[in-house]
Length: 190
Length: 190
Image (tube, rainbow over all chains, first blue to last red):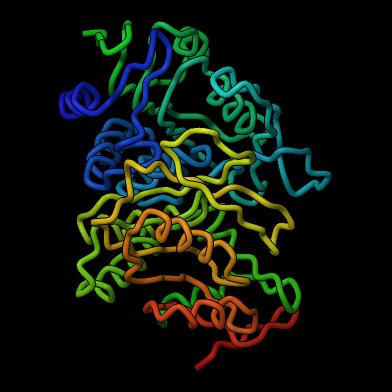
């Protein structure tokens, strides 16, 4: 997606070989028009999958996922990061280890909002180690919902997430794929 | 706002005199079309304030705030809830005590994204004790930005937040004001 790559090159910051800061338009300050374009792109790409719910993880995924859900005219479900386990049968949880942040949380969803009739499209801002996406997919499996697609705004293709997700045979669409980074320098896959 | 009140009456759940669950359309599952309508209403109401930034607190405020920012054609700044203090002069922080959740966090914003030229509109999903909104306003003050409005989706008028905010002489627009709740029953202000 050219407009996104241009934005990453002009406003993103490669801190080192691993860390990309996109605080100015995606994570902390958010550009609504860019998010709307991203949402339209995901919706168009996954249109034939008969999506019934878009799901994301709080909080950086919400902006692109919300516009995707708007375009597809389906609800958005925000998966919550709970510090502790909930002892309540109304919720479904799975433990996720964040390599990027170095912490562990319980990814949580109410059983009311995703069920066995759902075709779910998972949207997230980054794909790096893939642990968050794998956690979301474990939740959909527990709830017998069908995962029909994974939409990623920025994929760090040099980290292991993409390879892990490829094994699952779910369509993945990453809008910008980064092959390599060095301090101040970003190289895309194509 | 009639469509919102109807939604609260049909899909909200008054658990007791204090707790209103709106998980099905605002907090956990999110209805994009409803959020878009809410964003348009806030944008129209605060149009004359020459807003340069919309700000909200992660994560339940993001959906209504994003559509407000889209309509006003300005960036959205997501204030972060950090568990600990950041010892870094690039960030501005203030401690907030959540009466609703019983915890304390450090509301955090990068100095890059709000500055003394900004006219800020603060949007949040709920107004209850007002501590989150007061925290956001303390940050704007530290950054010498001008707070030009507060937009609240659901105000629990029987809790002390509204009275605290009224003292600041900033225009407040609450879309639905709840006067009183009992288990299973919600009474609006007008």
